[in-house]
Amino acid sequence: MKKLFFVVLVALSTAATAQSSLPTMATDIAPLLIGEKIPNTTLKSSEDATVKISDLLGKKKTVLVFYRGGWCPYCNMHLQALAEAEKQILDLGYQIIAISPDAPENLKITEEKDKVKYTLLSDAAGEFTKAVGIAYAAPENYKSVINVHSKGINTSFLPVPSVFIVNPDSEILFEYIAPDFKHRISTELLVSVLKNLK
Image 1: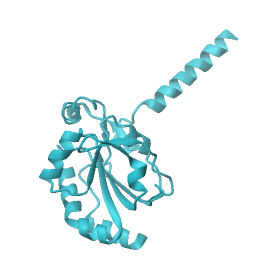
Image 2 (image 1 turned 90 degrees about the horizontal axis):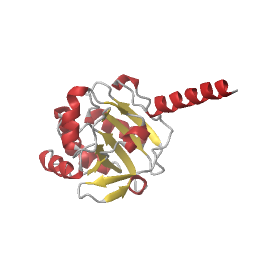
Image 3 (image 1 turned 180 degrees about the vertical axis):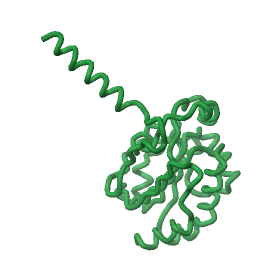
Image 4 (image 1 turned 60 degrees about the vertical axis):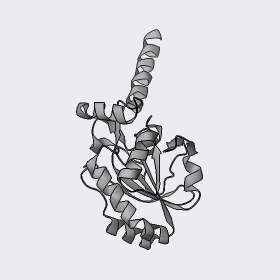
């Protein structure tokens, strides 16, 4: 009986470890799917204020963007493209919220550099990114840069660059997930999707 109990305990312990460990590659993630709901959590604004994501999503339909950080040139190009298309997106009745593991003070730098007026939020601990299912274990060559930009909070994960379109009930209507971080949804395609979802 003791032996059987030990085997069950080891199996449960192994399963718990497997669930808490991050996928090792961007292609191994298991993101939330269309029709599922974005979980509620608290994040930090560029002013270092605590923000409940459900409060923001409940205001209007949202283009919810996850990016790697202000240090990533592909992310900066994407954020700038969104800034240029922001009026079109707003006119269609959507808001833009972009989330990264960067610390709040680094969000401010990104806002200025990329001429961003929409909301940037910090998920330095990665709880939200992991709950959405798009976090994976950062390769060794990224660990120092993510550590610096998160002010020492993030040493282990990167988000797969993703765009979710979410209704005010936090339900996912559309998603674009790019395991190859060099590829992002074009603003033309995004605007087209938003028009079709109206």
